[in-house]
Image 1 (cartoon, rainbow, N blue to C red):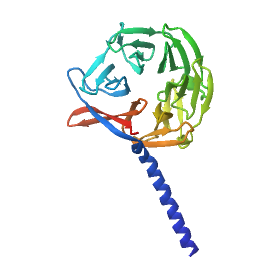
Image 2: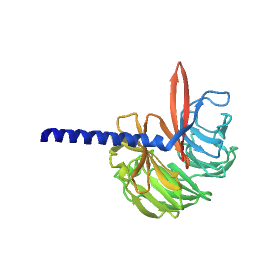
Image 3: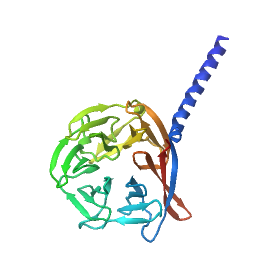
Length: 324
């Protein structure tokens, strides 16, 4: 009888744990709904490539970056029209390989270019606003007022620039592995909130918090990332991932409270775990998907679905909006 009772209790615990896990996964859809799914197909103005980054400019306009087409594009949600911003080349308002872009409230698009050796700023018409040259490696870009912050390689530091190209400060995160300073590492993210800068690397579960003078204030170790197993090695100035990685990091406002969006790519899997974390590091919601997270705004999250059927290739932009 004791054995039977023990077995029943054990089964109840297992079922409860599994049910709790299901609730965690479904929580994302409890908080968000699909506000729009946009089929991005070939047109006279745009041939579909690979959309890797999406950001909202206003209620109807989205800006996205296409890696294969090497272009920055403006998408009108109402008309579904797409137009290129700027053009290919090395002149003012032109680019070779744009990447890691960010857009300000007044329509300034800041991006790295030419294998990340330049930082450029253009407006929505493609007009050149500034170009910063100098040390190699802008991986993430954050414009704040008249300054630019970038997380760059190879020293893997947070760099503070003025828009005229003057370097105002540099800070290397407190912890890094031997070789990491020289490895080419992608993923992670960089954002600002209430005059603080938040940084997360692809190779660490630590969130670094800086002031706008590049002074580190504190570090956060989210409990919701304890299961993430980051393993990597360096060879020939490149990184090789053997474990999980942090592919995405940004902020999200829920009921006027700051939350973190963290994307985890599990090792040897095509599934991404997108987690919404509270400031105390606990998990609010999780979304497991094979769609690529391409960005988010204060109350939306953007996923790209790549479709290939009947010799046709196109992207679907799924926009998830906070419900409340």
